[in-house]
Amino acid sequence: MLRRAVAAAARRRISVAPARLAHELAQPQAQSAGPERRGLEPAWVPLYKRISKVSQGKPPGTVAAEMDEWLRQRRRPSQLQVLAYVRELTRFKKNESALELLDWMESRGANLSPGHQAMRLDLISKVHGIQAAEEYFWSIPDISKSVKTYSCLLNCYGKHRLAYKGLEFYEKMKAKSIVPDKLVYNYLMILYQKAGQPEKILSTFEEMRESGISADKFAYFTLIESYITMNDLDAAEKVLAELQKVAPVHWSLYTLMANNYIKLKLFGKAEVAIKKAEEGMDKADLRSWYALLSLHAHCGNSTEVKRVWKSLKSTFKKCLNRSYLVMLQALSMIDDFESLQQIFQEWQSSHEHYDKRIANVVIKAYLDKGMIDEAEAIRQSTMAQGHWHEGMVCIFAEFYLDKSDVNAALEILRDAKNMVMARKWVPSKELVSRFLKHYEESNDASGAESFLECLKKLECLDLDAFEAAKQTYVVAGRASDDEIAKKSF
View 1 (cartoon, rainbow, N blue to C red):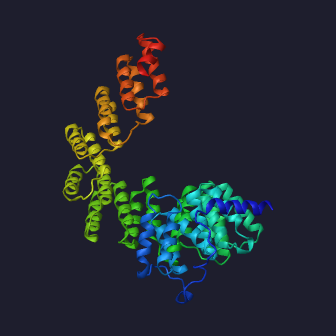
View 2: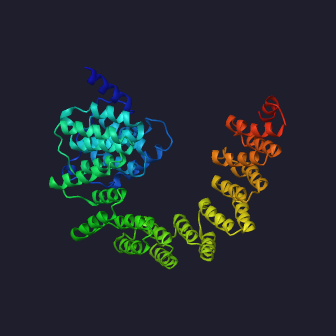
View 3: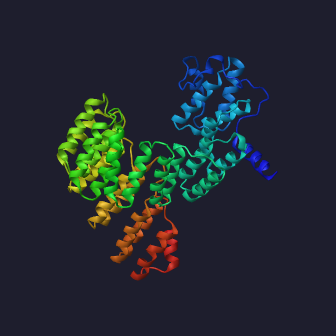
């Protein structure tokens, strides 16, 4: 009885679609009797666009209401087509709307397959949290549960960083004689990884192979990572060599090895691994290009950074802000200041949307070279265009603090009020502490008072900052506690 009550409560809390007695979607159309299709049928794209549009910032129930309205006015879509909508919404991170659409389907009598139940479980975990996901899982009748739903909840525990709870759940799976598949083993290895038990990953990998299940690239990636965690690079290299004999190696495995060679300052080995990554990468995947740029920069290889950048630009018709950002970060890392200036000028003349992160990289590079006027010119230009970035305030403030020019640093903080404009900005506790430490060490009560006044104007003066500054006032013999409080608050 208790279990049924919990299950009913879970369904009531999770579902946001109105219940219906009619079952318009209970049966798919005749042509969908074959393998499930994944794409959107052209005739049903307008409905998807309406759902996608109303799902932005609207209250729960909006998607369901839109579907109801469509059914009243037009012919009904097939169950498979609605599921295609769910997948498309999920692909664009519109999880709330995707979940609402699944709830709407169930309210109209649609029977979800174990795979779709797993999809719903994952969405509930993302939208409502792990507790709601657990409630939904236990609300599913045992006869309807499958290895897909079990493995999905196992994965949810990993995503929510509840490794030990996930491992406890796996013990329950074993007690129910749930036969693990490839996904279960992969999720289990993730849980051991998050629990800090890399040695268990090795035994799980062997168990999977002994069960006749071939490991995929993800399993090999996790295994290699576990060896690296245990500082056994030789074993990691052996696993990679074994994999090379039986299947194509995903480029990310080579970048994983390159990263660890770099940490050990084995730059020769790292360059070999990076080359292999480039040979096997998907050239349409920008992430692979970004990895190459970053890794070559960490190796200090300016020639390769420029070669990869040239290849990236010739591969893609349009160069994104993100690409310029990664390239500028790489040039900053290898201290190729001349090339950094050239690439920045190229971006300035070609960008469609301003990216404050790019400005910050170049500002820091100028400040590192002591070119304060040039850095300040970029800051002023950014402000004039109506852009701001809290990182920019911190870069300048920390630069001046490093130079012991606390007055200039404070002026930057005062100017932050003009830079923020649209929203409240609060300096980090670390930055506030640096200011207060300077005033305390220099016994500068006037400076501390000016700093507190600045925090007050930024609407971020709190008790912690007041208490830290009070010591400077007291040591300087400037005021009593009451007078300090009156001035500050």
